[in-house]
Length: 409
Image (cartoon, rainbow, N blue to C red; front, side):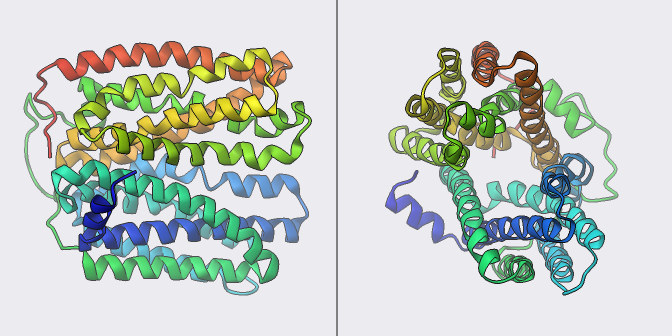
């Protein structure tokens, strides 16, 4: 992803190092907690449906809390937001680990923990442009993203072993410790900065400053296009949503885990290649459209019912193309005025999660209706290719305009 010198420089930045380590550790801990709670639900209810519902709960709270609570990261000092929410999550997760805690109470606590993660993540994302020097901003965002992918995979892998050999309660307690560790790191290492858009500030919107974050995202061509191209992930993730029936159609049910792991692993590889081969951030921004096309075009080949080997090859290529999300993410945040970053991040994250969840759910319905998993994946690829091509031209036009509504770092 980055050269050794760049990595050394990033890790040498105290504020960034604290946020990066805290984010990576707590992400791994979240995977432990998700697996542990799912196992607890299954042990106590013996219900597959209840277990699946519990796992799905990890996806839904941010869809609501992102747009509703993102403003907290703009109205209050961002370090304060991160530290406060991390301590709250630590306390709630520790309560979940108490032996004998009723199952319904644990699920309620989980929903609250996930909901208050939104202002933390919004404050963290909005702080990165201040923590990182402009020339290293893209590298820092890339390191954050790939570390989270790796932490998720490592956390899930460790969760099965830990929960099987100890107890779900221990996994929950470990996750509580990761939140407390993160709160201490941020408190002691990140500088206090005033709120970007403090409560009580009276200011009339002008023609150059829209009334709200949503208005800004809809009216500013570059921001609107970047958000749209990132939402194409809903089509790119269709193979993951159909991983089980896809593996079954290949007579390789054992390959379900492999199919699910390809996307994040290939994405890490794609980001590494992109940042190794293309050093100029402006050139990486120009590649957002072509890489978005690459993330979807290989799916069309599923129309030919590829065998397992070719399925893996196609998914790896598509996953590498998914590296476009990293320069798109950094460009989007760089274009946003500071006072809108928290709210815009909450809206953007909810939109991205909705597209991913909605795309996978719709793919399941379509696959059931047409009776073919591979035809459904190919259809998603075809639709995605058309949309990605249109987004590529829209992004090129938007970048060429002299639009003063968004400001650079």
